[in-house]
Image (cartoon, rainbow, N blue to C red; front, side, top):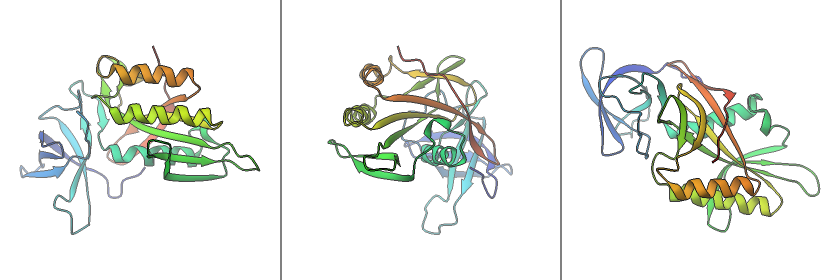
Length: 238
């Protein structure tokens, strides 16, 4: 995912009201930008550190600038725009980087499915008289508690647990289901469920994996020029 123009650099002053952040520009001017992350952003915030933002040309936007990348307290980069994760995974599938999700005839996004009225992030459809489809649920990972350890979720996620139930139902119907951790954090080397934060999610993930739901994780490189999925990462499910 290339940024044209490149992201602009500033200094983070504070995040507040969940969707807002104040930053200082290189010339000293202070502005308010949109924070596109509804989570806790635990361990991603470091006031006074470099951050990067994009600018929209949409005249209707109250806050035309969007926070994209943060510098964590440990000095790593974290892609905090959760809206980018689906596009990154799509790009990884279409470019062939995500080898596990190749060979399907059609790709669709945001398709309604399931008994709990969900929408699957990516639906890969097979061919033939009795096609086996692949349902891909994407989660953005930015929580790093200790060096190398990536955790999800960063706050209690009833919605995430619901998605796991939906994926198990997909497998029971004979299709393929994949939970895809999109890791936008340069310090994360593996991913595991955040059992201390959301024990129900962790337990449901273990149940889902035992039921045949596949769990993938890919790490990304981050810069002002682009964010790109690069390599698979291990997933530990305890």
